[in-house]
Length: 295
Ligand SMILES: NC(=O)c1ccc[n+]([C@@H]2O[C@H](COP(=O)([O-])OP(=O)(O)OC[C@H]3O[C@@H](n4cnc5c(N)ncnc54)[C@H](OP(=O)(O)O)[C@@H]3O)[C@@H](O)[C@H]2O)c1
Image 1 (cartoon, protein in one colour):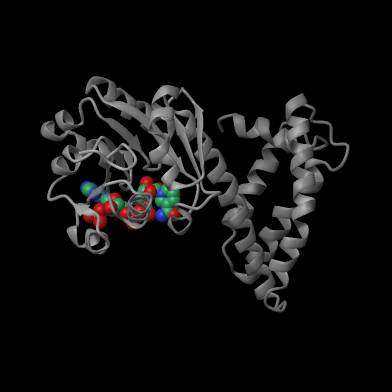
Image 2 (cartoon, rainbow, N blue to C red; image 1 turned 90 degrees about the horizontal axis):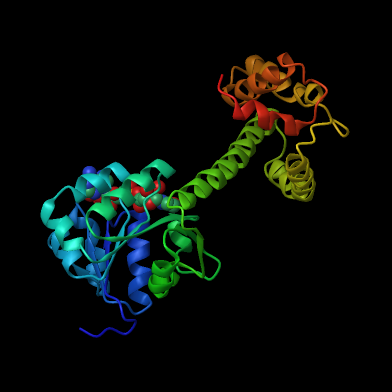
């Protein structure tokens, strides 16, 4: 069958994200087939005009490019244990968009090598509602030639399809690093909101303060990048001892209010390890060395 965009695509897993990916492919003009363990979840896609495969093997048979988006890599590998599915994938292109860690990507790449399947590992950097928009970022790792070949398909997911590199674990490593950064910021916001609400500040004040502080945070990060690059840990602006007061005070406050102190105690412990190592006068950047060491 000749298709508008040259590829027939199947999406395996039509949960929140998989449904968005399949819809974006269909809207971009690719003949799109879906398969999901729980068939009810494919019904809205079927009504939209996507082809719903009766089995995983049928979905793989229907496509040149097979996109996996199930909960985790262990589930993907479990599904791929089926010999008929594995042999149906032979000679095809497999793009894994399930979230995982670099070891998962390497394990999947090894499966692909053993089963004569071309493999790209991907990491989605956004919510399902953003899929298909111009700025949406998905990171990939794997062979450049394969990325270039399949790029028209990948661009259906969003305008910013980035090949991080050939090392198969790099997309998930960067994803892990970036998501951890965002998780830290979001937890920080929620913790601050708990403090402000308990202390009866008017609603919305903390959110506005956080917005106003974005340029300050940006400045702090710029200094941190520069210091780390030079491994310059001199505390010329503020010391670890000064910073360590933040979690100490939050611990006291949380105890007094009988509220969760998990974030404060984790930060307190990291600062104390630096201080015990004799680095109380060092810059915040020194905490990088603490994080690099095992306990
Ligand atoms: N949602 C997001 O914002 C987002 C963002 C970036 C990346 N991701 C990643 O995308 C992946 C899917 O996330 P999601 O939010 O779409 O989750 P979800 O809505 O919970 O969907 C999970 C999918 O995995 C399938 N699944 C789970 N266990 C299975 C099994 N044993 N056999 C076959 N299929 C199985 C589910 O099938 P059933 O319907 O049969 O349960 C469903 O299709 C995850 O790796 C997630 O980290 C999600």
